[in-house]
Image (cartoon, rainbow, N blue to C red; front, side, top):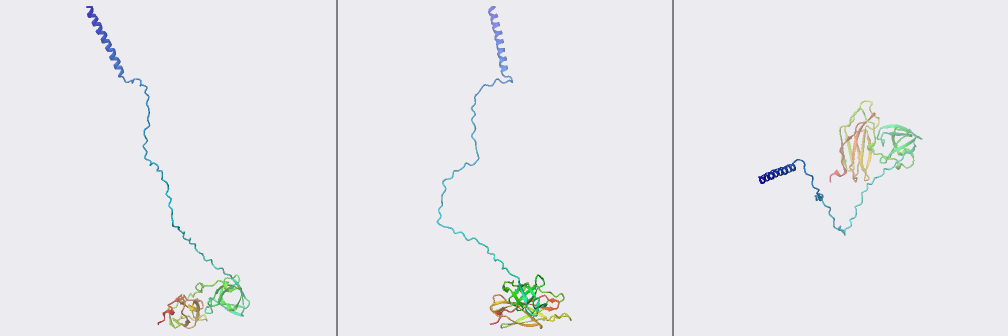
Length: 274
């Protein structure tokens, strides 16, 4: 009996012990984590992967020795031709009465008269006709007179030369340009003829009824020669030997001024038949 009792007590104690151990094991599976173990971790940095291009160390620079010497081209420098400086001279009329015209020849309309002793400014010069453009000192109403009738104080070559194309003539408000002109050459002589200008009574200028401005060859140089005519035909000398072609233009003239000019074909010296 005692032996059985001891077996029973031993079994009860064994059961109690197993129950305690089971409780401990269930406690180990609870949500509360066990204290972490103290670990020493060696952190190894990761290798950096770079997409940058690694610098390349250049090799020694090769020195090229050239045996050809390049001569630089000269720098183009624009040459500016300085404008000539002209002067305004003074002059004294040396004839009792001198006619002064709208243009550089007596072929142009009369503008006004000058008297001996008049002191004037000389503002222009046209060597082809030998006429000078003058005006009262400080004035603004110029006209043209023959250089021979003026005592010039200074060198006339220092006065501004005038291009005939720059001369301004008074225009007629009543008459149109001539309708027709023809030029025919015979050797060095060119004969020009044109349609007549029919004026109303009282419109005559009492001077030449026509003005022919010509640029003709004289002594190898194209020369300006104005010609006045009473009739509707005139002869002009035009020599060979100029590089520039000769030409002309024609006006009708009345007391109020000039008709618009008519430009027409001019026979050149090279046009002569062999």
